[in-house]
Length: 364
Image 1: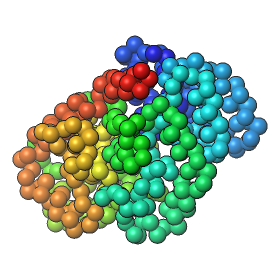
Image 2 (image 1 turned 45 degrees about the horizontal axis):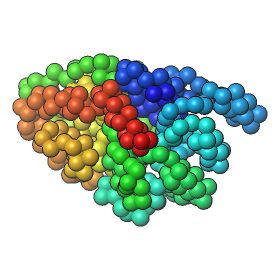
Image 3 (image 1 turned 180 degrees about the horizontal axis):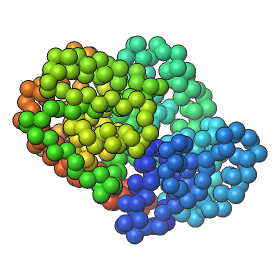
Image 4 (image 1 turned 180 degrees about the vertical axis):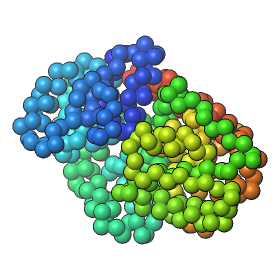
């Protein structure tokens, strides 16, 4: 198949493209590289620092002829390019008219997901946490996603696209309410050869916990609570616990710090793990964050459930992490099971085949 992937979030489309190419498909990526992360792409939509209307229109006009006659167009999100909602909608209509099939990715915040959350339909979500919902920045974000223009954009694409793919449990649950018959869950793709098994923890080792803190997102990810819990754990067990805290460091440094750790503390308000957690699992790091039963059900996993599920309250987080210390003889096996989970569910070629199968099923 000839495939166009439009937009980028944390390497999802880049990793998927590598899997699709390994399966023999012709793939083009059109994106802004996810901004500063600068993921490789074939058609560049990274605007200049000053987003002048003339520059944006010029780049779009030059790029449109390269986005025609594909068998499949996969959008990362309803806002698949860094444009106003109305312009994303115009571009969707163009892509739908000039290609065989367009699919929507339910990845990240959009109208359907935010609307589902603010009406308290999630059991684990930032929308359930009052201290977060009351933040001015979060209220502004919610208001934007629930605005008329974003609603129109999201619903028109969802209704007129050929199918919808969700990369995480929350997004699948949100779309199930109105688009269950055309939505499927497909895990995040990870290029496993880029992340060899590195967790060689032994029962006698000092257990090394790792937490990456993005200052602008630490509250909405629950990293402030996890950090406090880790500090309390360290105070209780100074001879058994080592902490590595990465605060908004460059990705290469972040990776180095992660590679010398045993347990990655990911995020609180989630059913499962995102890209960060999936990458850590591939390396055999034990991942503590989301690990709800609904997630395992979507994966079809009934036996190997290695994620350490963290509750929302600090003292409960301390208790869960304390249990890991008390049963440290089980940690080497848990690290192995974590890697096995990544191999079974996140391998980029296996994930790419799931996309191909879904696309084919919706185009027949």
